[in-house]
Figure 1 (tube, rainbow over the protein chains, first blue to last red):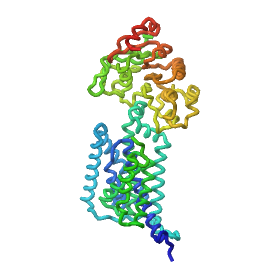
Figure 2: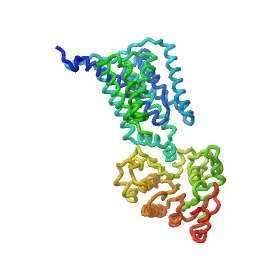
Figure 3: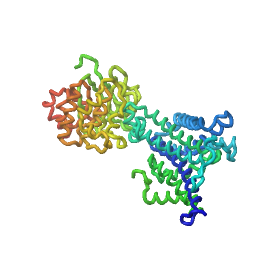
Figure 4: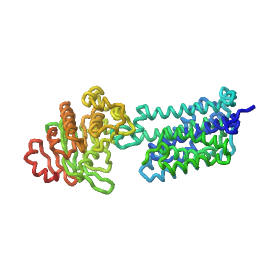
Length: 296
Length: 236
């Protein structure tokens, strides 16, 4: 005897809702990083998918080569990806700020191709499994559905990361520097704040967010050089729907669109791959600045 | 005033916006404790002079020293630490920051700055509205906030660009009182101002700028006798 909602078994509905929420968790973390980078640096970071993939690979390589497990990797992967991002910002991206935005886009796009191509050369395109730690394996029966513990953990951890990042930006001194420098970097610098360093740090935080999403994704999806390239297109759609540069918009839209995608799988599976892009087109028609964006 | 070395000395300052040559050899000095006003029509280079001194405009040449140190070699984010604060003409209040966050934004550069209590005594409105969004303040309050946040930092020299622009007479009077109070505290001010009826109440000396150069310099005592020539030069 199964319960039905709109002719759909509750189990199936809840299952897809969970899948949607999981995907939404990754959309939210990734679009948050993109929004922070765009807000401050005015650079559309096409390397974001590659940095997400790097996070997963750092976790995978730490485990296979050094026996370093999931929990330390959860700290180390974003740290390594974030630091490598800061080096790239310092060496290359910082030289592009005075040029047309197109150069930043081209550079990060090229960077993504190089990183992904390199990993493809060494590791091929087949996915590699990553086993989560024992305490996060298995699941619990909630009565109306079976919840794999790791998936529940991803949803909660991503919420903590998103809310934590939002608090960092809205409630701390560093955050007030970031917000002020987004509005008027020259004046903030004239006040004695090292804005170039702030930009490097911002890129590091954005890349680090992609890295932490990557290591968290490793046990859910498989670790593969192209895992980011597939995801990043959807994430860009999320950012456009939320409104470029809006922190809160990126987070909420990430979860919302993940859930919308999950529900479409239940009710009209054929459309599930395009539903986000349909929503994007509709939002652009009605509110070109995005749901949470300020009209420029 | 001139027996000691000036706090700020500017010699043959040239500055460019891209290809456009905006300053053609500006010379000026500001001594400790003085309030000096730059007069001049729109577009003669008063704001550009302030922006070149603080270092926002990097395409510049000449000699500038502040407190005995060469200003030309200092990166923009270190100028404040030498003791120069800047209040821009557009005030530069951040809309994504609350009044209090705006007030606390510039790093404190010396122990001589005003405490938050002193600031709130001088600007009681800011205390009442500390949690409002910065740009929700009235124009006059935004000007007070722009000045207050620099006074907190403890700079020796305040570069103040047209503080009275677009404000009601009662607010202008209040800004005059604040500037007198700063003078009593020994803070040095380089003021850009079109309104010399306002400036005469607080300025010790004036520089007149025309076409990207300083063309004359006189103390406040000579203002009366130069009134006619000034009206001519300023077109007011």
